[in-house]
Length: 168
Image (tube, rainbow, N blue to C red):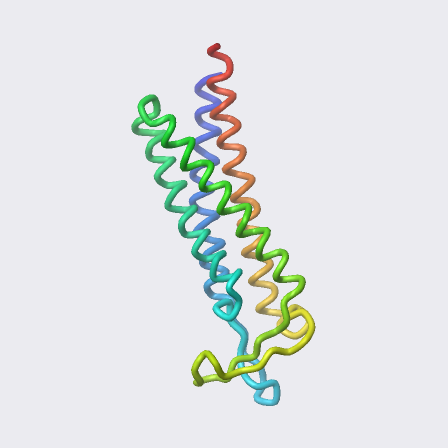
């Protein structure tokens, strides 16, 4: 059972790295242009929670990759470091996904003016998902990917713990 638990843990650690990177890429490419009468475009950079999401997803991918490396190369010697990296990864992924799901539901749409500085633009009342369907789809998809990454790191930690539980 020890070998099977290790394989499951490593599989989910690899999945966390891939899912974290995928979530960051999907969010970082989230933008939508509107016809001229609407006045511009919307991008993830206009929402601080979405910028946090991208940074958190990238940092969690790095932490998860480091935990994966330590789990494979220095399993016995780096137990505390892997545990610390796992906690950081879980905290970042769960908080990032939660932030996006919350903001996605409540935030108004920011219409920036194409070619202007970041101050130009206006906020439109109502959820941005009503007006910016493609942007909303990317934001929602990235949050779902992030939630799966958070679940995957949880499974990786639980299977690692199950592996050690039988030895006592």
